Image (cartoon, rainbow, N blue to C red; front, side):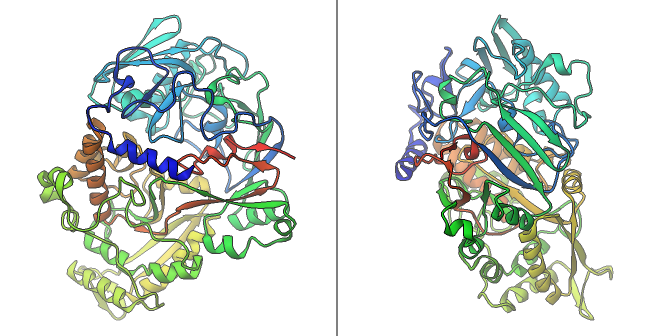
Length: 604
């Protein structure tokens, strides 16, 4: 199945411009829409291809989170909420298939209609859509949700809202959204906005809701109990309105899902070994190989499952805040990357089992190619040659050490870059030209034990450069608050990327997001080439330009030296109680944020 899926991805990117715009481009109501071409599933599809449509309902599971929470509203900037909540409790007009790079199928909406140039989109709601309390979900709720999230919601909703000219009801169950800009993805993004209740929130302070002010949703689960910072109990709604939808067949099978919170990953793991947690995701290959040998596994009560995928590596590492010196100098960032002894750290912490991330879209057809830019990629970058970081056009690759603890070659190269940037070592300290010593702090959330271990090994290398850096651990609320306000020198960075990058790229590293509180542009990237490549991606009319623009973006981001990359996760690893089952037909996205537990079931 995985090989067949890979063939489908290859087929997607090889389509000619003559057939790219299929049924989704016609101004007729459709059951689905795709960014390129036609959706894979016909209007009469019965279930998603990677689910067990006959999966039984029942069973209760407990999942573990580290840290805590102080909010149950996942749609605002204030507070920290359990990351899983939106997937359980709320729904959107359209739903994703995780077996296609970017296709959406009707969920709350029965049909979607859009102009050929996608300057407008119209949705028609299904009959009988309701919130979890049984109240009807109407067009008024949809329009209210777009306006409320766009004005009082998390900043991630702002970009779409600012590109909407009008939202109007066109029929009892239909509404039309007209856009102000040419952006072919907006019609799809509109289908992915969560819908909340107008009756619940009209006239109330949404942005500053208290923990007990839980947004009403229409999803399969609702919150039935909670204790701040300790647990959240989610219970499947037996009267869920969408139980018979093809998109929902074989999904959301557990009667209840409890989210328990632990101080750190080590305590969570001990809870799993003791039977208090039903499943854990393991991101460290060495830990997977050496520490999953406790009695419950030997007895067969716990099963180890490896989940392969075909998505981009994304970026995981230590991000440098270019809003602050000395990280505003690319040569300093380059030096700090050279000083990071990846091969030694990887061998120490994972047994060398996990390959390094080489770029933001590595491990996929969207990733930059080795060597100098050529063809359409070079054409796209050439107008911005004066603003490109060193190596973006000619080729840039991460340094490779000899794997020894000292990493002498890497330290020498790092020292040379510091000297080129005007720094010097005096009495064993790295000094700026003004005579002040170079020092900085790495901000890490409590419970991130692996990140702390990586940082501790990195500090040893920095000491050899005469840099006295330190580690600061804070609780989750402080961590998200400080990173949201860009109040850090260097911090842990994780950005998952898909085979269908789009408008979220502006929020991740667009210039307008560099000073937008709460944006994902933690590095503070401001580069016209980045902005231009994102715009080209969004307006591409064929796969050739789309892939070229993404590869060019990957080049600029990687050569920008904003992040010190760690290892990539080329496969998912889930240890779980034997009663938890999943279909052997894996989606191309593998273990995404919703695949487990959404498509799993309980079987004695």
